[in-house]
Length: 112
Length: 111
Image (cartoon, rainbow over all chains, first blue to last red; front, side, top):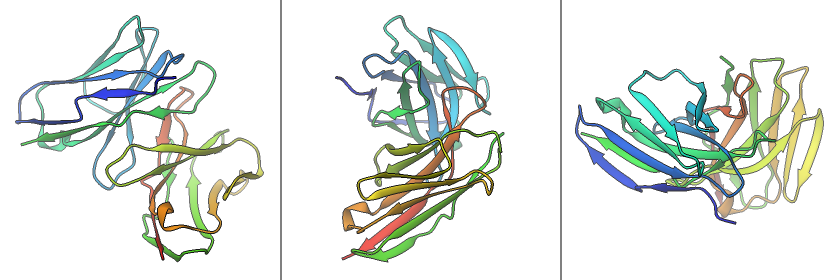
């Protein structure tokens, strides 16, 4: 069974740029959630995708957007990067039946 | 929005002791509760989840839930230096299959 994978591992961008992060869900999981974890904080829910549709969103502005593909993989796009967007971005997948979230290794984004 | 509160720590215990990590939550309607462990620089790893009042044991870990007091705890028996990590408490987010996390408690186990 393949776990959740994310790419890239690390990324450095400058303010105002755009970034795309990628995630492949665990085998058998059709739901993907994205989280932002700032240093010293718990993960904060950005949004969730289920069957290629956004299925819930946390308190993040519209410049955070996403996609889910037919194979359940997902992308997180962030436009007009700000310094405060520097964080660990986590993707988690879950099965249709449960609340348990299984996390990928994360992408460390640094905005200069 | 649901709130989950944890003491940020660090909680320091000697090797072999019992570590007790605590979490309170604001929404009385919360039905399930999750504990994750996160090593520095790594992603969260699910340790346990609990749905019913009382205790749930899994190896050296015991989760305790008291819905009347809106309180959930994680006990780690025979603590090991490898248990040194941040422990995150989480509850489901607004009916979706996603989670609201606390800020986490850092645990330090000294040899």
